[in-house]
Length: 516
Image 1 (spheres, helix red, strand yellow):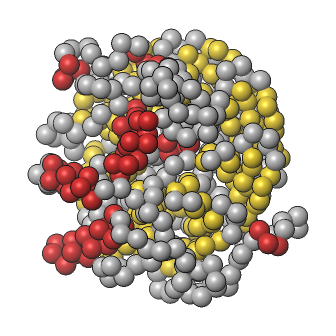
Image 2 (tube, rainbow, N blue to C red):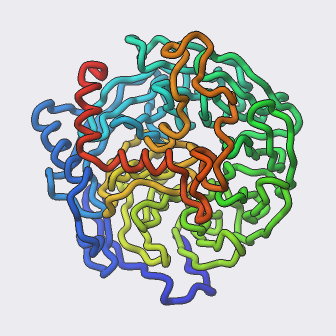
């Protein structure tokens, strides 16, 4: 268990005694078990999910899905659980170790076996599986209806949802590095190009055509390995070489290099013209995205091993000191800290709340002052193994996350106690998992099959539209919208589309036959 740092002001922390039941425990801000939040539970997709989950179980009786009673959940309650019964895998075990991607009503979950499981986000039922040939513990990307992922020790692969045989019919695979002892980063897809890095090169970074798998360029100077970020026509990446690099997204030319002091095992993030990168030297670095000049560095009290994320000008970053920090994005000043009891994963921000999971398979919901709203802990994992929880993602008030101890694992849909979706820079830039907002922002206007062979719907190629001002995405019209660091119009529109029941009903109508 973690210890409260002596320097933490008492009023910034609310930690309550925790009670447990058979599957999980949850605390409210007032300390009463079963009361997780005083927020008004307004009508939204979360209620639709509750009802759908209950109805789905009653009708289908799918053995691998469990759910709480329909329309009975409140903040911190499990809506459904996938993987409660043993999953088919040869050889076993099959469990879940990749951050989740949630797009078009589907949850994509990488496994330690040879499949990505595709789960209906409303009911928790399996929609289909995608054959991967190997373990997949990096998040897949879903853009323009194409699923791209990097199985361990294998080529980068792509499957097309517009093909009838998506389960086993890949459209291409491309060697982007990786050996029996290494792995490729999670792919980041933007405007018809897939970007990946590795630490087994050279080359250490690849840009690959999303529709053909052709390598457009590669970079071979510094060892990388973490998921790249693409903003304003630039690719930012870090990794084992201890360097943060900025590359031209169209050509791969190196623009600048910044020494982050030690190996990085966390992907960078970008907001308001600043790149934020964690290092095992115990610091979070803020670097000017245009010049590579250091703005400030923050002492995180331990190695920063999870991707920092930014929302409303605040950087949320955790370290091996078992602490989550809120840091002013402009000055680098600490605003508050929270003891997570275990190493924290990359947090997400939705509906005015901060959600952070831990390598001990715990999950905390905090307000933006660092006060605990509720807590969830997976209790069905073996403590003498390695219980873990991936970085969370929130879509329309439902938080999706995986838990595993290396032998068994689950995918959970949890009532987040909010009505929004993740709006932080990690999710909005498609880094290690994303939702519909990034899928729409990153997509080309038309696929080659729709607009003619070789067309991507973007005359500028990999870099996309560079006309916006500093925001989270670097996309949108010339009037952009970014002095406050909020996402461009494409992201805002996509987020709006996430919240409507009409959107959900339309997707289910369109996909009813395809997912069988």
